[in-house]
Length: 86
Image 1 (cartoon, rainbow, N blue to C red):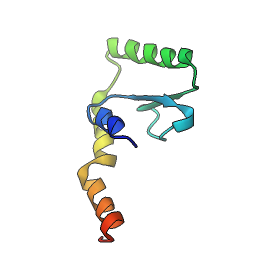
Image 2: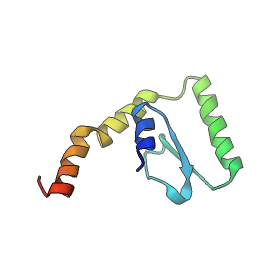
Image 3: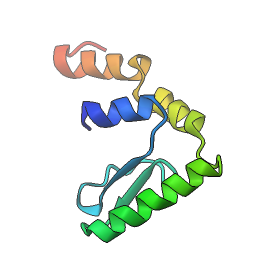
């Protein structure tokens, strides 16, 4: 997963990507579409409408990020993988 996507999640932003590179994140966080510009625009319009209606919950995205990608989760995995330390 790219640092740009992790950064977006840390700020509570949703991810829109292609089905070919889906990240298998929570369905309320990641929106995967076919590789057609119309599909991307449809999702972006939907997200914009939800934002205007205050239906986007950035705190749930931030909490998902903290539960899955915070340093308390990543550091032990990184140390084990890189240094063989548990």
